Image (cartoon, rainbow, N blue to C red; front, side, top):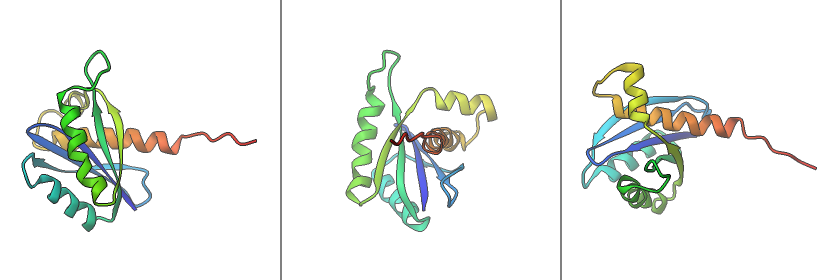
Length: 132
């Protein structure tokens, strides 16, 4: 099953999809944030066999949830209500990182979502389990 990454913004929402094995993240598309955006994302998730959604966890410089994070958590409720597992992955200046890598273009927010998703995938892959 694939995993969908989301870089939530007040104007645009970047989307990223993992490969089938959940090892690599790839930019998918950027949607304008509006009333029907959650429905569009649910449709994309269904079409691509998505089982989990990773939303960038936006915090201020003091480590507290900012206005974007409050809206992102509310936005994510629609995915959980649809039966998808939702995780939040810490993100810090991912749009700036993506811009540094590729410059400014129409896929910038999708690239930021890719950074968020790849971080989650890497942590999951490298998770160490200690057994007795």
